[in-house]
Length: 406
Image (cartoon, rainbow, N blue to C red):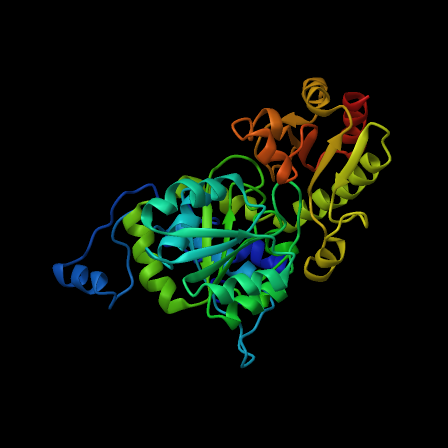
């Protein structure tokens, strides 16, 4: 199944990347080994020279990890073709976390003196990376509102040191959605490496490679795993020579590799991805509609509501608006804290994408160290609640929200 690109999406979720192993295990087992043996010195030489396929060391590869990588690559490439009509071939590299995957991608593509252009709404980890780590390596970043395509082009034209465009859509936690087709085309026009974080949408709802991006990243901790059991990340690329070359080398030398146990949990989670996403999305629609008419809610950020400014963009490039939303309570900071404390079924936690509904109040948790002025500027207001809608009975979710808000 590893090379079969003609199967349906759900079939790939279950069988993609699987290679029969010698003991005929139904599922690929956990290869809990740090190193591998050779039949002879000559075989070791051939494997190290990549003249023969084989495993060397846990940091360089593992059969359990490879199955997860191949499955994700097949899902991101599902139904997509190259310009000549041949099926799109992608390579994925699994990492210990989403941030490890992003770091590998960045450091294998930009160097001191280069700049990255990114949207003004970024995942907090990426924002800190561009603010606190990359400048020390001589890599600067320019933050622009990616809704203003003309402004983005103006900035790129004025600075030839911009080498990478970094996209994140939908964005966290305001659910901004940016136009992948227009921005990717603009990036390619000026020879930029274009990369997209697809964590919120998953390949089931959105496929950035459709728009000719170079790299896609995921925090596999979230919807791909789906059960909150393992931290992980993945970078997927379309340039196979580069992926097998500098990206693989950077990954190995930085040491942010995954491990067999967490890869095993990830492959099991992927088996139900499409089923879970259908339920997540159906529940989120009902939750958003309920919140939109609640008298104590000032506004709801959900891409499936026509009131969201990016409703049309999401409709164009996503299969469904997704399972993530945020909403503003009229009572501000105190109302946000009180709401969290009254929840009975929904879980107060800062992650997302698990089977259960996770709710957080950014102003009192994830963004407590950010000045109020900066929070407000990026839409992270005092009463904002972020919600990852789970797959519970939706009436139970609604009842819990109603009693907690009122």
